[in-house]
Image 1 (cartoon, helix red, strand yellow):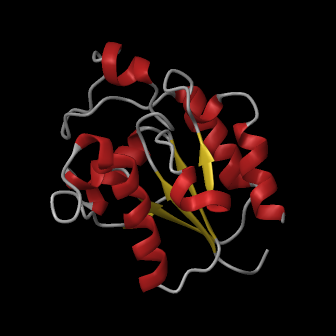
Image 2: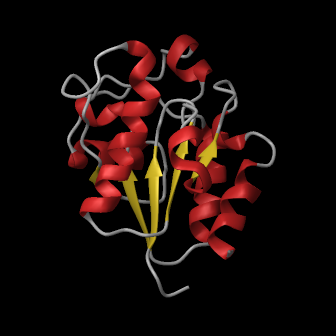
Length: 164
C-alpha cells in the first residue's frame, strides 16, 4: 500500500480496558502516573499495524490533555505498542463543547477539523465513544470498554477498511 494510512486513536476503551482504568491500578508507570494498557489489546493493535504500511497515528484521546507527544510515545513504548504517535488532534473541549453529553460530538469534531486542516481524505477513527453519527464510514466502534480492540470482529473490520 503506497498511500498514507491515518488512524485516529483513542486509548481508554480501545487499548486500555475498564479493568486497567478502574481495577488494575497496581501497575503504574513510574514517571507518568498512568496505568498499563491491556496486553491482549496491544497485541491485537500491533497485529493490525504489522499488516499495514505507511501508517500515521494521531491521538484523539483525552490523554493528550495530560501528556506531551514525547511522553505519550514513552508510555506506548512501556506498553509495547509498536508505533509512535505522530500528532494529536487538539481539542475543542471547553472552547466549543462544555457539557458531558457533548464529549462524543467534541471528539468527532476534533477529528474532522484535523482531517480538514491537513487535507486527509481517508482515515479511520477507533474509539469506544460512539462517533458513528458524525464520522459514519470513517469509524470503528469498540463499544465494550471491558474488551477494547480485542473484542470479536473489531480487528477484521479495521483491516477490511484499509483494503477497500
